[in-house]
Figure 1 (spheres, rainbow, N blue to C red):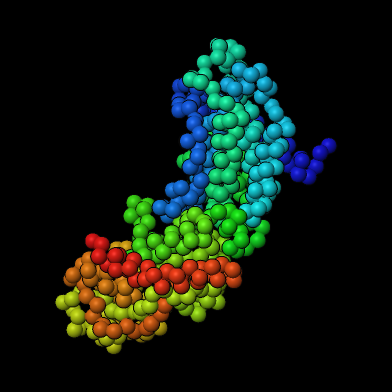
Figure 2: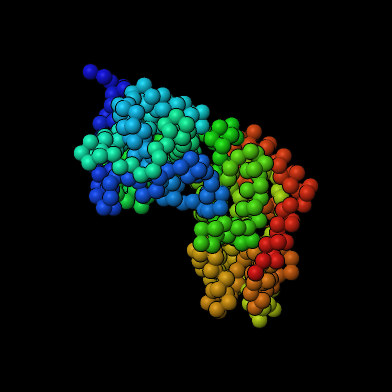
Length: 454
């Protein structure tokens, strides 16, 4: 009786054969159309640009987004199966092709290993898809035997069209899986929700099988530049809540550090993928291998150096006081703020909170979780002042003239840096690129452009 990896692959195939057939037939019934007549016939162009970075370079991905992208690529792969079945029908070729299937699975496993992914999970994922593909092809063949061949339009050639498209999808799936690995470690509920949204026809039992397969994905080694190069992806952590450095509006990212990170990734020959982090979780996310580097207006601190490493600085600033202009004389110094009843508002988890708690002993400190709307609390009179970076204070004054930087100088001084995984090669490559960017004046130009935007 088989054991070890062979037995595991056999179980995955058996589970997928049942789950895949059920899903595919239910999907056909749900759309009141034959599962062997795709709603849109796949074309090479449709799959030539499917890698995760095609859209992720513009969007900020959370855990659910990352997992859902893997699922959508699985659906895209299976969408080719009616065309595969049609070609095999016309050429009188058997549905099952174990030799070819094993080549596909082992190629995926080897590519996964090269990307620093555990290859066994890749084998199981592609075994699952092959079993589901066999089920759909068999369903198409049974339908055509009963009612006649009715595939719409010309049948794409298997060697010239279909297989190259499937090969591109293999690479795209593995890149998407590479990005999703940390998210898959955050529990079955997140994975199930992502699969439900991306594969709405997939029954719960089938989602559970696929979810277990995906959850087995692991990195073989910590984040390094060599691993990023093998995957072709640079994962960039950013908060999306700190203008002028990192802002997100309707999922679209913008800001000084977003543009710098995109240019940095291109300079390293990699595609940027932006993943969500937060100020409270920034160091834990670095330690959890959720990104290769983070850029979000991050200040250089001893704690951040201890957790990983940092790049050279590319902009210099410090903390200052932001309040209503009408109160500028009242709140001109730290001493003015440090009295009972003075309401100082601050966003949690970052250097702003650390400074406020260390510097103010008597003021009423209010933690406000949303750094994008915190300024409205000052404008409306629900808070008196905020300690924040001078870059942010200047931007908010330009956007809201009733808000002023009430302290003329800076209370601290720190460099803005990229927070990096502890890899000397990555740090050297990032610093080399940043030196060139500084020589060209790119960071300063991007900052001035951000200040000029409404």
